[in-house]
Image (cartoon, rainbow, N blue to C red; front, side):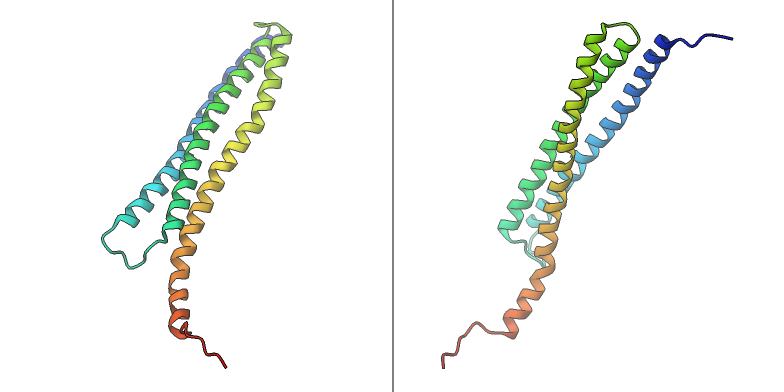
Length: 161
């Protein structure tokens, strides 16, 4: 019966984990950039149309575009943090395989765990930026007919008794 080779397993595990995580990170970061960038492009296209039946309030338009830009910035940060995190995990598994000193692996693991928080924060900010930007636009578009109905039904003249 062949003896279990811990070194080979750790090296193989590190390589496979890094490949899978790198592919997932790249896809997730690209999706975040695409949804925020696409939303800003669609918003500008809609706002620049000749005379759309619904006009977007300028404050809402500006706020939404800023939120979408923030989403793109944090999606880029997400990809950068995740890349550094993957390098640290690769170093950790290499140390476990005996290619680096154990202290180097331990410090790489600690850095990777710290980067986990930054990765999660950047991801959440990017997604929340998109959701808030779309919500602002949606509420502005949905509430416009209601506001115009209220203005027609209740004129702004005041009667003083």
